[in-house]
Length: 347
Image (cartoon, rainbow, N blue to C red; front, side, top):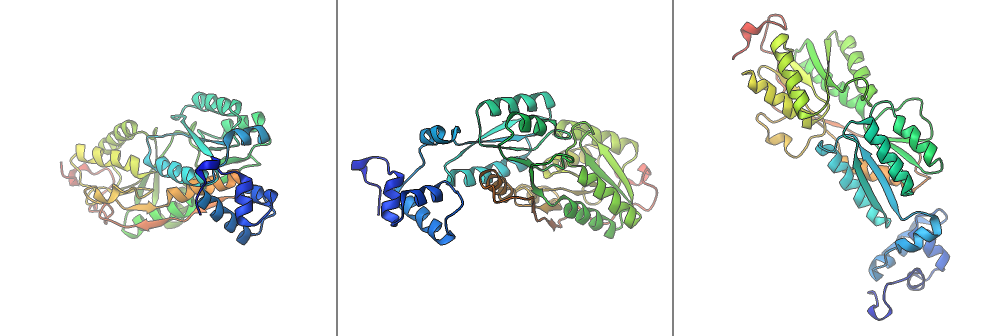
């Protein structure tokens, strides 16, 4: 069964006729509305795919006041993790005849709010946002578009109701990383975190401090803007002043800057400084040495956020499972002296 070029673009009535259902039922299935049995919906979607049916964005705009657009605001598009999220979001959106508009706040609250205002003016159907800081842009969106769904990506945003939260299981990730390093014998562990005014994932630092206290490990939070340049400069200062034996980063992306800082100071990753990443990018096992990290499916996170934007029945949060992938970047500490004993570090 194929689309008929003589009749032009297949219509909902064509899908309904071929599927043996009413036009209303076909419309409900194709627009992901409630009231269609799963088997019937699957049958209608399969027929639509065979016919080459695609939703008419102009018709949807007239019917719903929306042009079939979804907004996605990220805080740091340089981080490859967000590229995986975008890929998954686009895959899920295309299946529903939607387009994802992606914008980057670049850790700027002002830019973030400008993006939100423009997306609201475009009347996007819903907004997914990895916010900067405590979530002021989320509140702005809710004021501008109170009836539109909101998904918060990779953030805590406490005291904000009416949102779904989608992201990796941060509690499990931090616990796995910290316990792994403690089991290797590290007694002081550094932890990269964003500056307080822009930090959005407060649950990570809280879990880190809790687990360190439980294990009798000395926690050492390191506050820095989470760009390669800033992390590299901050880690150089840390290694010059009082180097820890292990560092937990917020991403594989920033772990690259830790590698560079260690090498600039003549230290060997794994032997002199253990490093744990987060995300398990495709390039992480190609580093020298390969990076120990937390594996998470970023594409699945993107798909989950679109599901929550388009399906009001898919309420609640989504925590993507994480798995610790142990590689050569984490080994037992070589030093027996104090954390600040530079004499035992090769230069």
